[in-house]
Length: 388
Image (cartoon, rainbow, N blue to C red; front, side, top):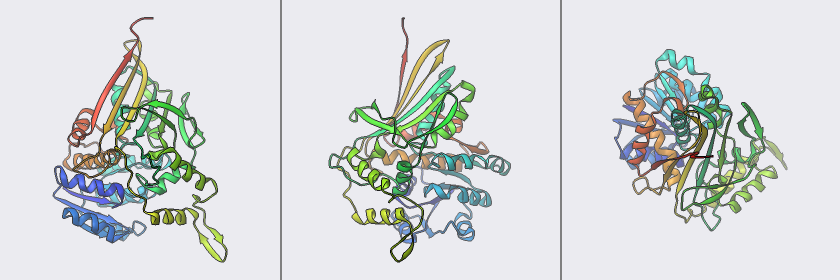
């Protein structure tokens, strides 16, 4: 099995470490626009590496040549050209999500992947990813599904660290773009970070404030569970893993226009992209790693009926920091699922030609068992009316 891993950033490095630690594939090549960064990650595990510019088809094709599986751990904005590259290379494909709109465009590749006999699994990190598998699992346990609500929480650094848990570029998209929800059988867009709600996560998080965010789960779950009569679906997160005070600082910067991706003139300098400058400045700060427990809880709550009676089911997937992967629990559950599914695709364990969200093609129990090998636990809670 030859795995082509695109992206050597925060999450790509964890995918690589997972591939090196459990059921190591015969070949892994790591590609990144920054060749030095790709080399740094690859050398740690004895993998191959190469500088890749996805904007150039020749560069992408050379990277994907001979690959059985493509794991796209780079920015979601390049998902579409990488899928095109996977088709040209005859390789299966998976990624970490498309922030709703890109995911919808990716679903349109379904016929082409099916005709090629290739499988693409979209958004197999934590959220999207584990939460989607939750949704499919919960729906299978119910006769009808009225709603699926996903909550994403983590312990946070009491020092209000600005250290980001994943791509800053994506975080600013989530801060600034309107959240999509599915209500009353229709998709509705709402203000970002709106509809704050206290939610009871597993300890040691406990009650924490959550809010809406644009996310890929909502792009596919209402479509996948349509036959179950789903009427509502939304995603809520606790400040993207930041302490609230830290997130408010980033929200302020975005509010005054520094997260804009529209080039503008600054003095005598033309074509300055405010967000590019802001991200560069934040990266130069090199904030200290967060000093907290590093515990993660992905909770998916579904309400509906079973045997004619109302029922409420909840799945929690929780993770503490991993000694093997050397990262916090929240990072484990983003990186390891992609590595797991890459192995499934490359070995033929998951073989369903076409383009699919995780809730329709990932078998829940074997997936939970593979996560458990990495110290990640999943538990089911059931609530039903006994009388009244």
